Length: 306
Length: 138
Image (tube, rainbow over the protein chains, first blue to last red):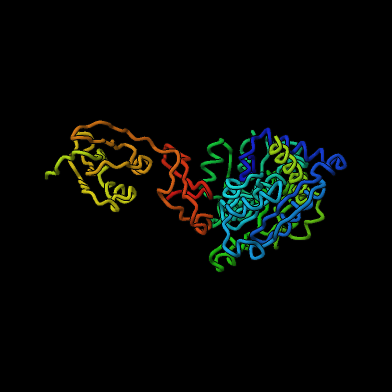
């Protein structure tokens, strides 16, 4: 049974096909409005995530399908001690496809191993969040028209930022990509990502702590939030949370067609004064996420039916 | 120093000096009732020094564990006082329930029934990563 746990589960060709489907959905929504009629998506959210869950639910409704599920662990059988494996087996009897978020890393893999229906990883702790990466890829494609020969800057928490790791993984499969890593020393990209992804794929990358210095060369700037929930120590969080705040003055040397992205929610790392700048793409990213989730649900249900 | 030869059992030879005890622990040999000899720092023409483990019982040994700890060892199976089989070891692609994932955020940290599975991701540097959370084995 085909599932999506990590973005690298899909080939570049499959990602390109998903993007093509998403673009077709954007252009011809009526064509897809009953594609999932009679199908049920189970949204199993063991930790709260309003936007991702609503994005999945909106995606399924726009495909003509239905949604069941829960939005926090305490309203599920997990509160009674049920394992992820058992939950996946049980939900397989009720639904046609699962979207699951869980605070523990690897939980979606366990669900996929035990479910008899496709499982979409909607975030497993700090590990993977592949549908955010799908949203990111569609945004880059629609804004830049390509993935090759782009300089992409990642700024903020590159250590715990799973969306950063996933997008770097996905982009590293294209040619001519240059990655610029901007973070405080304590939140640098883990060395295994540099070694296993960037160096393994011969991707040019630079590391810096100075956002303004590298701003002029960026085609895409991917901002991230320092996430309180990833820290065991509150003091470390408070010390690092305001490391980078993107304000209009910092964009004075940026390219006129820079694409500013953020997986959201933001706290204060992008000033609201930037929201009206045509280069701000983070709310388009949200919409693109819904279209990519629609394309993904269609693909996995079609493959499951074969 | 003399250790009697065994009639039926297993001799794990050419263990890198110092790794004998680790192998003893990971193979769970402390749970056996039979005689077991761990010989440390034996002079070896090939290795300089080596460790040897002799198990005086015809029991299966987990070759994956041995391959993980020290892939250069040889495993000799002795029956009726004669060498009947000799295994050379390869680094295993998967390790199941040999080591535990120490990442407190990993699903295996809270779901006790799950196997702890590690995958070889870098053969040259012998790096294993948890199949669930991808944390590196330590």
